[in-house]
Length: 112
Length: 499
Image (cartoon, chains in turn red, brown):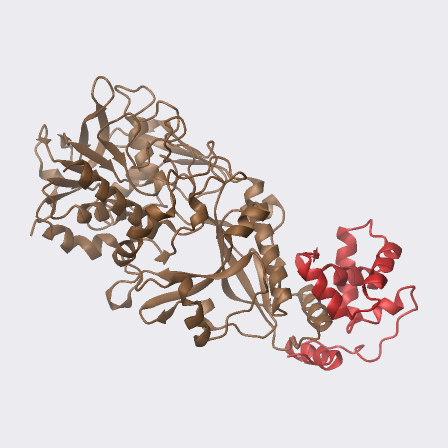
């Protein structure tokens, strides 16, 4: 079932027994990548993943990644970009989790 | 009815003279004996154990293990009538066509024939292991009506199916000794000797023929068997031991002129918790964990690489099963939430599961059995297993699992965490299938195989080796049903040869 991100996030929180006090209220300092990070429904979780990815890939170049992501997202939604990643075998690992490459890069940017 | 004969009552010095002698009363020996029923051939089967476990007999298996951790040699086998089926799990699945092919990316691969040679024997083998009607991958549609399969996007991995052996009264699985004891006794042209240990093979002076073999019992009796044709059916480990230990004519051991006997030992590594699989849609149907009875066929799904993916990604066989529910850690929860929400998928009922698997190993001549200096109470040299698993074997499976993860994402159905990365992690997670394979491999070229395409030992006219020890490559499929099929093929060959 496809639902709105905010609703799904709340349902997730319930399912995993999570408390998400910042879901609707957390403020982030401005970054050069806010346009990209706005595509994430739960930036806090993405940041957690990104921190792990950073540890494994310390040479990550955020500006180059952001440039590439903007190109991919120019006329497409994040879901469409991710679908394309999967079809084209572009997957990455974050702490062993196999995720679409664009999503992994967004997570890295969230933690940058 | 022919009662089983206790070899301990045979007078020392006796020479028995059957047409066919089968050494070993496991699934191979029992299958062969039953398949030769009703022929004019006088058949004798020699089993080391009795009809039940006996610690003193079992201790004859003791040996040493070096290298990668493995069960002790006297714990990974069972030395009494029924052999390995006395402790098997009943898992059945036929070999795949690619398992028989010579594959450029798999050293030493290739059987002397294709799956067409075995196909005519699969149904009879299936009946002998009592795994119900032949369904396997044909069951997918029917099982989907029982409960929805976890969807996979297009790609290199598909949902395949195990079937399971079962005995009467639904007791899993079929123990060949117990199940077929009365059938063996009813075979008029068969005599079964229990407590009879083959201790040495004696070749003719020119080495071209097996003249006779010695039998010893634990109460001190010694007699000989001079058969027109002899089949070694002791299991992959003990076949090699008997051949290597028999050196009176061939100094390196019977059939070992090219230093191949005991090499290429293999088993199926079964690493625990190799991955965590998350189903976004929640609980998977119960048949993912416990076999489901589909009109007499006990079915359980497994994720298997397709043959074309094996070719394109240069991976080997693997069979991955969903094992048990697990809790996600905080990073796992973050991964699931972030990924599912990026699709706009509701994963509020998501469930996580631990994944297990059985792996095919690449043939390795240095994963091998050798004789040691010490001996058992019957004077047989004990064995040492030098066990090895290459990093490439683990890496190949990881590629397959990554592809499975990609396909789960493609279907927006779930995702995967690969739990094992370093060699240390893989090795510490290893269990083994106790599926002994490959020590007397089959090849048309004597320099590359111990037995020919008919399982006859190269250069020895009347000596055959049966069972999974002749498998040149191993597949990820469990061997029992397949080795029974191969044994039925051997029985047809022997009937033709001895007409």
